Image (cartoon, rainbow, N blue to C red; front, side, top):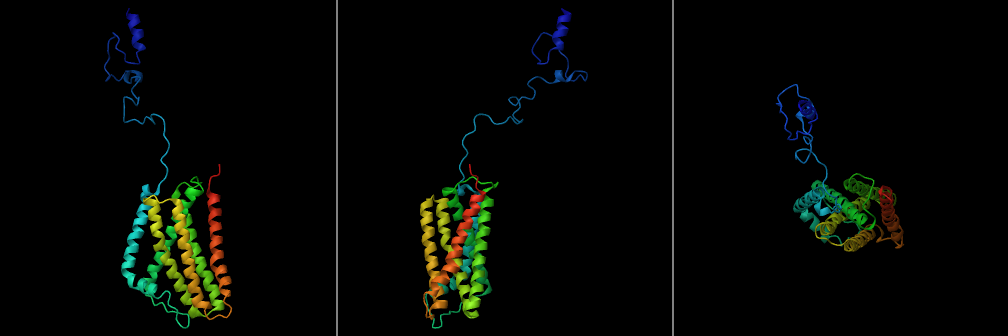
Length: 286
């Protein structure tokens, strides 16, 4: 009987309630298996231990920009800065809008602006680049796909924004080089200021489209229609100011079509093709 109890005691690793003589856990000579029970590290008895995922994983929630705190913070910051900018330059903007369709006798209208007004216009151009990159990102997510080789969608938006900034800089550089060859410095300077003003106002016009699509569930189709209407309107204004600045006194009126298509439409179409190529290169094709 004593031998049977000794064998049972030696095999007692579960601490089951058997009629054996108990031993103190403070005894240093006790083996480790006697100190720790079979369920000592089980997560069901110890909630502080990581137990992994319980149950079946559901479908992930689709990405939505109005749930993105980073993009929301950026748009809110840009909106506040834009309000501050208009509060400081509303007289300049109002004056330029009133004189926009005025045609002087020599075709050149001086645009007197301070350094602060110039910096604010550059900021609005940057705002235009950010908003255009977001609009193109919405277009890609809805019409192309949402699976890319990048780790985060922020990288994709940043790539689009850098490309937008490069497009504006390249367009201004091309205009400056071509107009320096064919036109005088006064007209060239006036045209660059006009182009800067038009580009800065694009950001103001595109902001409602981004906010409506992101936070008021405006459909992508309506956003595309809005973008096309604004783009056509902007190009018509650019065409008009280009005609007034360079070709109003020109005998051959059709030269403006060649000029406008070569310096405005061709770069725009090439840039759109570049955006599609970059998007297709970054997209995961199953």
